[in-house]
Amino acid sequence: MQHRTLSLVALAAAALTVSGCASGVEASPDPQETAFQGHGHVEGAAEMSEPQLALTTVDAQGRVQQLDLLDQTRSDIASVDEPTALSTDGRYLFTHDADGITIVDSGRWTWDHVDHFHYYLAEPREIGSVEGAGPAAVATTNSSTTGGTGVFFAGSGDAVLLDTAALSQGEISELFRVTTEPHDGLVVPVGSFALVTEAEGGSAASLVGYDADGEELAGMTIDCPDARGTITTRVGAVVGCSDGAVLAALDGDELTLEKIPYPEATTAPAATTFANREGRPTVAAVAGDEGIWILHTRERAWTLLPAPTPLLQVSAVDDADEHLVALAADGRVLVLDGATGAEVASTEPLLVETLADADALAGVSLIADQQRVYLNAPLEQTMYEIDFADGARIARTFDTDTVPALMAETGR
Image (tube, rainbow, N blue to C red; front, side, top):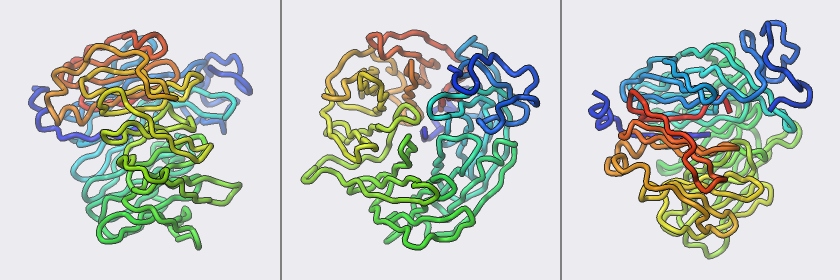
């Protein structure tokens, strides 16, 4: 799941393929009569023949815009309170503000059916808000119609699990709200279960399993000192710890927890922000000034790669060529060899103005999908589409009429 944060004071000033059981379907002529309910369909949505990808942005004043990547049309889809951060699962936008989070349905999503996908399009809408004190951490699964969405409020210690199925119907329903010691914590959904951080001395120290009713699961506790950062992969949910990562997965109807320790004698800083092409088993993270952490969730193993230059962000494309994509500290987007860390290709610096402003830089997102990489340049009022497989070629540039302070790719 993508999550970007920023301080918006400076930005406010700057702003003055369907196959398998649905082969060949172009679009349901009557969404209410679609034959594919149960495959990510909800009432009022049309099934499409290709992913309905868009870049959704939020400016400093809370204006939410969507750029359709197929026809390049733009539309305003919501207006929210001034945001401090943005999280997404590829369908819903969770905008963070001083009083909690506001949830916006982009109206675009992909249903992952393992061996094929279903693509849907509906009207975007603002769903509502979830109140909480202090900064919020949002964690999602790869399903936009089932399971749960986790929200942890650091100021109050409230751990909330939202019903994602209810979100798909335009409703907010809390499956549970558990109050813990205030800390920078997480609620990580895993199927019908969730992991909640437990604090010790004011910091997250372990993960505790809960069922959907908010009851602790016997024997489902695992050490995870300084728990920080989470992502859902094809294998399960990853949570970063100072001594490695926890992999939470389902074995039938049972929740399993497994520790993946860092290699012995490593001195590299722990991974705290993970990124990949959504759903893939391999994830990447910046290892401070010492390189790149690669976590192979299927093999339950870490690899530490050297970086050719200081990096701000990195993501695992996890394609046949093992590409990584990264944002360098000088504003270039790099394509890296995932086996060696060597530079394969790069753009010119794309963020000259934004790099000089820490507040604006905090809202920059580097997003990889199967074909392209997307990058927002807030102070340049531009978004870039980059073909990582073609020498980091800039395929398209999208100038904006507002500051794209925060950005997410929706429809994936």
